[in-house]
Amino acid sequence: MVLDVFEKNGNKPLNYKQVSGQLNIHEDEGRDAIRDILKEETKKTTLKEISPGKFQLVELKTFVEGRVDMTADGSAFIVTDDEFENDIFVAPRKVRTALHGDRVKVYVYAKSKGKRKEGEVIEIIKRAKMEFTGIVKLSDRFAFFIPDDRKMLHDIFIPLNEINGAKNGIKAIAEITDWPPEAKNPIGRIKQILGEQGENNTEMNAILAEYGFPLTFPQEVEQESEAIAEDITPEEIAKRRDFRDVTTFTIDPVDAKDFDDALSFRYLDNGHYEVGVHIADVSHYIIPDSALDKEAFERATSVYLVDRVIPMLPERLSNGLCSLRPHEDKLCFAAVFELDENANIVEEWFGKTVIHSDRRFLESKIATGIERDGLHNADALPHEALQAGVCAG
Image (cartoon, helix red, strand yellow):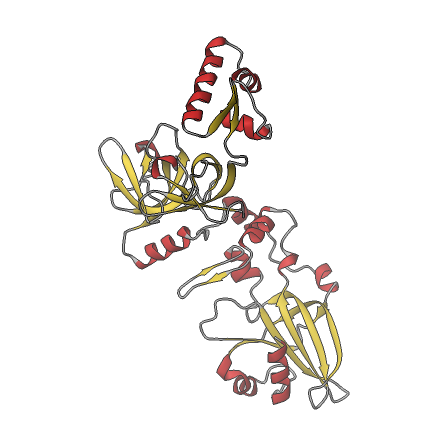
């Protein structure tokens, strides 16, 4: 705090009265304490006494911001925004309560010739994370949470009224709620129980949580999705190009986890044929700035893993209203192309559609399935049409 005064004043020489005044300290006891601090910092070579009672920082711009890169022994390197050529070393006891990845303010000591820059953390500007996965350890009077993250070097103290039903040895997610300056360990609460150690589902969810992937949707988001009307009104259909009587199908691998695009096909009276590429119209169901909209923006995309999906939207939308399942009317955006007998594009159209998928095809069964089922007006799709449609999708 005292050193901040010099920094804010462009390292102008100041005496203890001037420093006290800027800190709004006017009583004699407080001003004497400031004078003692100035003398102490002078002995540490942080400050220099350029004339009797006048002090100045040894080096201007001794306060910098950067990101904490923790090491296994509890020390850290502060990666700055090009302030210094090399990272700033911070000894373990001077890291204070900073954690790996935090953005911090650091006081940099005057550099002795030939030595690397060293400093100490004086302010946490922004925490990189407040939630951790790990193991709950219970005793009769308190609990500790041991994080999985190897760069999180502090166990989290959990009061017994904050264990959320967790049992000893269970895998869970804990959230830091406080870290008093005098406390060795942060204080937290058990936010979510993941399950028994070693179980596949538990460990998969722990990995997802550790990297910041949400495991559930907020209640408000789920409620909004459940409140969306399922029926498609005649008024909405009237605003769209109607493809419900046109042969339409989806093509996906056998293990596909969503069905959000489809193809339509039909012959035209002029001897050409028409291929439409339709994708689910999610925007029809999402109100701008709603909880659903904000959550989808935050997630940005669905994440596909070997055995599960972390969806961008709740299941009612991702696997229901916006899934182009067979034998259901669905709202889409589409690109529709009229092609000649050589698959050259003659005309194109882009806009909103309503479709009714006739069949979900697997990749290896497209042509044979269509020939067998005799869908709508397509006795068999020519190879060129399928190729053009698949490429367009």
